Amino acid sequence: MLKIAIQKSGRLSEGSLSLLKDCDVKFSKGKGKLVTPAQNFPAQVLFLRDDDIPQYVEDGVADLGIIGENVLLEHTCEVDLIKRLGFSKCRMSLAIPRTEAYQGVSYFDKKRIATSYPVILQKFLDKHNITAEIHSISGSVEIAPGIGLAEAVMDIVSTGSTLLSNGLKEVETVLKSEAVLIGNRDMDEKKLQILNQLMFRMESVLKARGFKYVLLNAPNKNVDAIINLLPGMKSPTVLPLAEQGWSSIHSVLDESKFWQIIDQLKALGAEGILIVPIEKMVL
Ligand code: ATP
Ligand code: ZN
Image 1 (cartoon, rainbow, N blue to C red):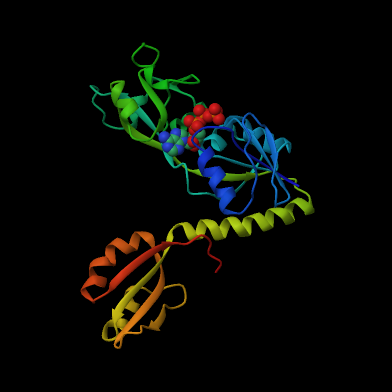
Image 2 (cartoon, rainbow, N blue to C red):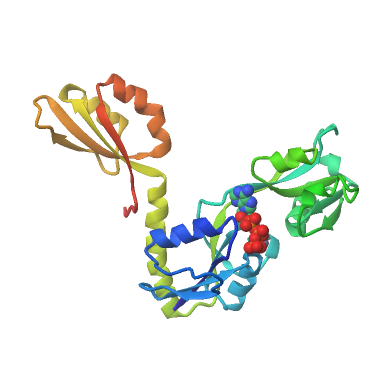
């Protein structure tokens, strides 16, 4: 039985739940429940505060955990980073009052900086040979300059609107973070076997996320040119249409590439283009 810890509620919950769901690990998330068994996989899901997860995984209370990379780096626990998961992406940045001129990191020398992530900030300052005073606070970091607690802040930024409404501007990216899967270092053979099964599923789900299945109709004379644009996994499928002189082409495509080639596809006479999500991809 593998115990998987995910955030109870917050910015990691939705992504963690849908990743497990896509891996076909089914469970009911009853209100206020702390632990729930998976119905069709040898696992239990634990719902915890994200900050507690690294320690629980280190202690073996949970075998696996899904947390932000930022939390992993802040807690410096003895756990393995098993896989980056590609969701809950965010950045941690240094911000200063909007009216201040900024010429580079030396700005922070001898300044007071408020943050909830003192370990990550200290590492960044050391790397740049900056001596600053770190004020560790647990929430609402962005109000610190306004109330005279600090001259700068280091916090998670998504759109920057919270900084802006507090009269701050972002001047330095300290860390880019995403959700990661962490694991206990002493799992027994049985647990490692279940982990292998789960990783196989997770990898096929994560691989599929960046890709789409493309179907289109094209005149036969342009099939070769279209195949060049849509290389597919091995090579595209080409099937004759009932209408003479036309074929249907099926392929797999990196989603971001689609918008780059759509005009070329249309110029080659492609019609009835369908873009379909792929649930899992096993290569
Ligand atoms: P908890 O109550 O579990 O302690 P929390 O308030 O510490 O929750 P959240 O705000 O839910 O945490 O953020 C959890 C994680 O999600 C962060 O550590 C970070 O990795 C990521 N995250 C935070 N803010 C954002 C954002 N705006 N966009 C995307 N991901 C984010
Ligand atoms: Zn937290």
